[in-house]
Each structure stands twice: as structure tokens, then as C-alpha cells.
Image (tube, rainbow, N blue to C red; front, top):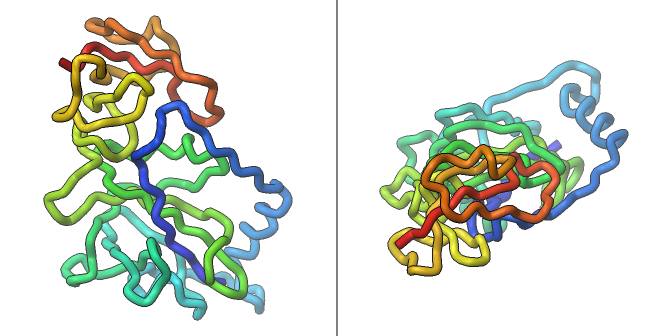
Length: 218
């Protein structure tokens, strides 16, 4: 069994966009069971810091908050592996480990997340694909933090700015036709005071909010 770590950019899409992935529940249940046992029936586990996440020698996809990682120099584009935090290859630190989800929008990383790494389990060849197992919410170790509120990247959070199409933009680039996010709620009645332009989004199953509470950005 191998674990693939693929980057999922948390920004750069409309707030109401949904990409649905249908996975047969029976298949998921069978694979989840296989994940906990070796071929001889004994349980297995290991730390992500043991070796490359893309190896097929029994390494684990388990991460925990505080672990560090970076691009895999021997892997495909946008593949990652675990590193010691003081290693020169480390570029991000895990803020939180989330369960993976069939519906991408239902995975909501904490504020300040700059990068999302989807960890998938594969059987046999480790070249791409696989069954999503977990999501690593990472923050850059450098000073570049596009996931901070208003910076223009990451998932949409309070303090971000959006254009007329509900696309996230950097607040420093916002114009008179753009908006600042005051809250993300299910109904307009839940919007905080100061909201002048509540934006109701199209239905997206799994997304925890349906309305962007907004006001003029400039």
C-alpha cells in the first residue's frame, strides 16, 4: 500500500463552485478495512516522518498537527513528503489534519491555511490516483501567507475580499465594485451588523455556508 500526497490549492475558485466525486460506499468500506491490516492480518502503523510518503514499502499516510513537509524532490509535480521541520526541504507545517471527504467543499481548514495536501491510499502502483484518506491543512514556513485574511488565497474566511463573481481577491487590489467578507452563514438573517450586500450562493452540497455577508470593500 502506498500513500500519495497531492496539493489541493485552497484558493482560486468561486465560492459557490462544487466538484462532486462519487465513490461507492461498499468499496470505501472494504478499502478502509484493508488500511488497518497487513496481508498477514496483523495491524500496521508508522509515522509520516519515517520515510517518503510516496514509497510503497509500508509507510503510513498518518500525519499530526505540527508535522512539517514539502515538495518531494523525487516525486511527480505537486507531490509532497514529510520532512523534519528544520530540514531545508520543509516548506509548510501542518495546522490541522482533517478527514478526507467525498465532497471537497465540506473540508474546511482553519484560518491561516496556505496549502491543502490531500493524502490518498493506493494499492500496487503509487503513480497517482488512490482513495482520499485525509487532508493536511498546512501553513507556509516562509513569510508568504496567502491564506491570511485579505491576502487573496486560501479558503474564503471572514476578512477576505471578493469580486462581483464571488471570486476571492487580495483586499489590497479591491476596487469600488468589490466586497469585503463579514461572515459566512447559512441564512441572511444570521449576517452580522454592517452587512450591506448579503450574497446568496448557488447550492453546493457539503459547503457549510450558503450566504456571504459582505459590504463594500472600498
